[in-house]
Image (cartoon, rainbow, N blue to C red; front, side):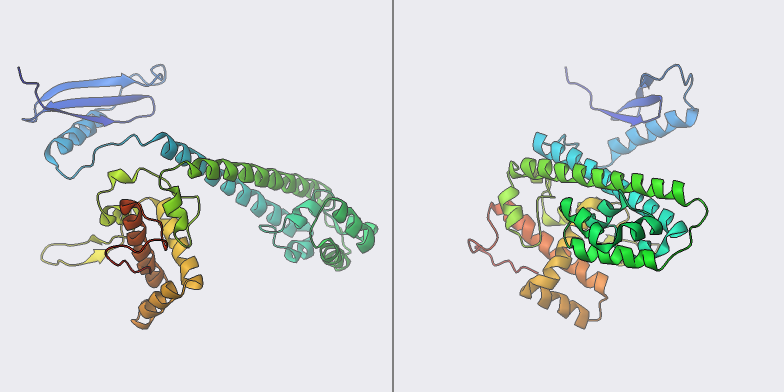
Length: 340
């Protein structure tokens, strides 16, 4: 007896999911709420949720352009978890630095302007102990330089001079300076702790990435590092990879008007950023890529358009290298591929 062909659609909710199963004729075979261990919070699912689940199942039955769901390999899944964690840590660090600078602007704007706290570890070390003009003036340049040197701060003399000069420019203590300074010290320590977590996560990412089957090929590509991983076997062409990365235009036709193309709104933002940033690096450091970029600009394209075109060109090269199992710049391909 032949097994009937069935399609299932699931509408996800916070407490429950609604699943609808239909057959090849569109007849509903099953419609059921599935608990998600939150049954005490919700007793009923709105009727529209059930309708949404039916629409999803009906679309899955009729459409032929839907991709199969791939679980992904252990290495790729692990990399996705680690890179997501790193992204969150970096966002937390940015928020801490922004709060620190906003707090300093309220009582010590001269010191806030003196350093780039996003890149200067020395400035963060300084703020863990000295956050007010009076405290910096009391210790002075010489003793502050020694204090920073003992904590292995680079350019400790310049940091000390810059900080004390900022303190000499402000002799007025504003209201709330003491609690504000305590908050700045806490945020500086938080940012430094996040720096350590990010560094530890980077080591884990690189170690896991080295085990990826495409690691050698990806690392051979100029401008790319251990930040890209995945099961490339599910991407049948470079066009498919470009579509996932948001580097392939999609049609925006309406009525009798056709041929309009636009950038896709739905794509893998992190993958797009990888190729975009690598293209920016290549446009500065690789002669062939630089020449391609300049040709795009000469044709009237803006900077972003030229970089996007270069990113797509480099994507094509990377996909070809992975497909053929070749390392960039080592063995000449049978069909020449120009790196842009």
